[in-house]
Image (tube, rainbow, N blue to C red; front, side, top):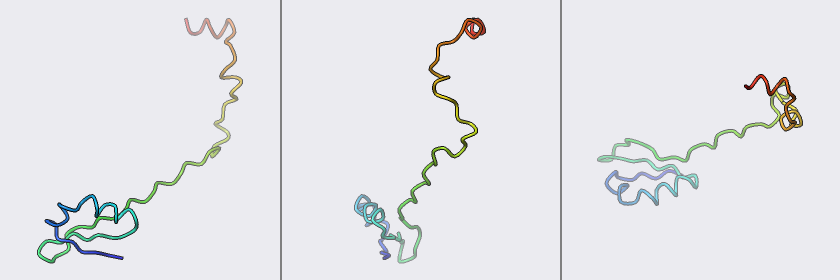
Length: 76
């Protein structure tokens, strides 16, 4: 569904118009009856996939294990 609204009216009703756009309605902003812009809901970004690159995974036990003397010396 699409609704055309005068820009001056849209200024007064912006919050309502944005809510309607989020619910799927397309709002067209017009000046003197000429369409100038649209208010539409943003597309949700794709969710990141866990485990997408298993070759980059690090064993958690290695991350939490205490460092040996050689590793500690490298940090000094």
